[in-house]
Amino acid sequence: MAEIQQFALPDVGEGLTEAEIVSWAVQPGDTVATNQIIVEIETAKSLVELPSPFAGEVVALHVAEGDTVDVGAAIISIASGALDRVPDGDWDADADAGEVIDAGSEREEHPEEDPKLLVGYGPGAPRPRRRRGTADQAARIEPATTAPAEAAALIRCTPPVRKLAKDLGVDLATVTPTGPAATITQDDVVSAAETLRPSASTTPSSPDIRTPIRGVRKHTAAAMVRSAFTAPHVSEFVTFDITRTVELRTRLASRKEFANIKLSPLPLIAKAFLRAIERTPAANSRWEEATQELVQLSEVNLGVAAATPRGLVVPNIRSAQRLGLRELSVAIAELAATARAGKTAPEDMAHGTATISNFGVFGVDAGTPILNPGETVILGVGSITRRPWVVGTGDAETIAPRWVTTLSLSFDHRVLDGQQASELLADTAAFLSEPELAVL
Image (cartoon, rainbow, N blue to C red; front, top):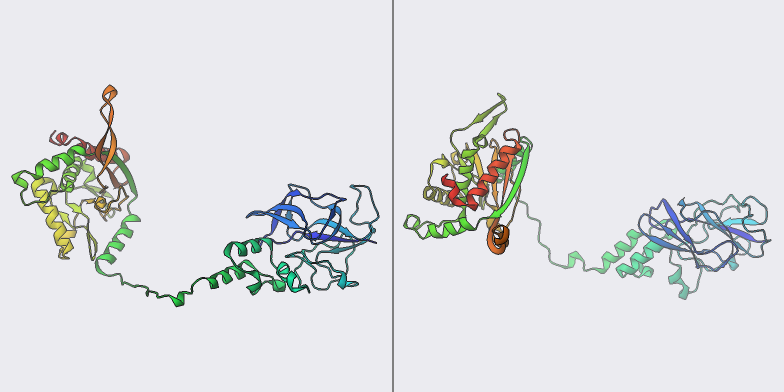
């Protein structure tokens, strides 16, 4: 009489709960050997080939290709020994043609005749024999008594764990198992791999640096959080050819009016921004929460963000719209020098109405600056770089190297609508693309 053994879908992925049957490599009537590949399954992580834990003749496939099967469900029955033949497809799991022993059953009568065990699967703890159709438990992994040469092949782990060990260069024979029935888990392999690396304790390490948040940095952090969660921020960007402004700066720098003044592009950008605010005066407004009013301000106190050893500060230039280019250049230079020296007075950082943040000096192309609390607009200035650019129109269109930059505008959408903000940013770019427009 044949012993019919059922192979239940094992957990091949450390916590696998189900898998899809992709393809069977055997059919009822085929003879299989222990460790012969019988089925390919697909888990949530990969395709896995499962070998047979038994040698014998395939009696039945309990699931079809494409089916999704829970871990622990019987997927195939294999008969060892003589089997009374039955027509294909007529095998009955409840018939009494022979004993059914699942992959976890103990061979009580002839333990010395147990076949060599499949890697990752094998007989489990002693359990009562089960009649056909009652063995629906997952295969268990049990110790095996084998010759030393076979020990490596009988290490208890699933195929994914074995592959992980191979990928990490870990000898499974050196791994201490922590899983059920002395099974090696993925965590065991990872831990073993860590021991192969140089220990952190053998290499010099620097202590963590803790810096108390005080003064400017603490104030800036609080202000940015307050602004970001109070004013509904919207940002827009424009990339354009700023060559003519760069050339204008070069010409102006050689004039006697700018002697002893280091004229950078920033004062020219600030001047264009102030001119654009003049055309969109709502940008120089303040939202009054207490009275639910918009207050349009008569003076533009232009803030210029300055990076200092103590943190970012934003002092402002009072009534900046009243200053000529030379006066604006001097004011920006003095503002930056005072900030770097840590001598900016608190009143110089109060009552700002609009701000410029020039992160382009750090090689940054664009960004989305956060508004200073109480202000409606902040202009971000990206790096000015040489790029290929389309010049001219129609038949005269060519590609030439030009100075190009990107401006970004963040604004309080309670105060400005999309059209107003877009016009403000577009005007700023237009004045820098064609500086002569600023006199119109």
